[in-house]
Image (cartoon, rainbow, N blue to C red; front, side, top):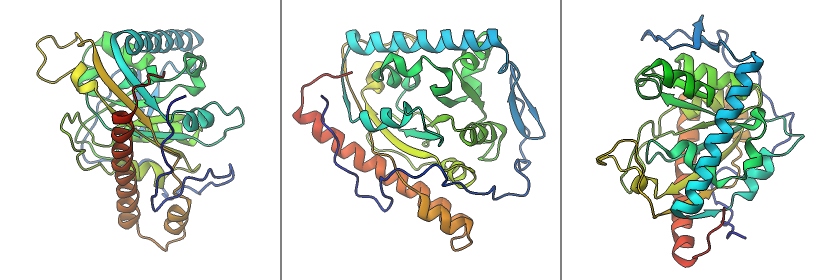
Length: 309
């Protein structure tokens, strides 16, 4: 069994909240209009700021999406098992929440961003049964200029439940509204709060989007930080061949304990904490949790040679 990370000593606790911990929508207008116009690619479209996946209720589309997701995760799992030396820590608490048949709360996972293959490669650390139901498959934000640059790429990444995101369009763009809708439906959303690939040793300042997603959900998400290392060596930015990964690298993937923002968000919704202060506190707490997770994972990786997927 993989070593378990010690309980994180954060200002936010790691207890699991009850399903009734819900908040009323804080905005009169659910989708504020942004100043920068955003044009999204098919099969998505925007209606009044609300982004909609045109084919989401089509059975054939859903079956194709399931095939794309499961095959992609299977390939990632095979790659981690046979083409890298991968160690995974503390995934059990996350799996317990994700696989709970009675779970009504959404899940928001956050991770550092090392390469273009972080998502989906890190999900190869999870059991394949995790992805056998589309309801449990994560939605994630992907750079529109990269993932949706052609019709073929748009269809492929859309089937993989990737949402086209325009860099520089801010936290109120349609992609963020789409992610917020999925959280309100109890789904799993994954984000990279650094906002771009960062292959340096230190994380860069997180974007404010994570604060918005937590502050405007009507159903308080279970927040799980994930830290990983080694994918920057598999797909370094200065590589000669853009789509060819490097083999034989050491990979570490560490799952943190669930974080609880109930007290802070209750104070915000009841007017005891202003919007800016709440957003800063949330972003800072997640950043510190990720930083602590990195230190613990690096310490464990230096002591353990066990490979567990």
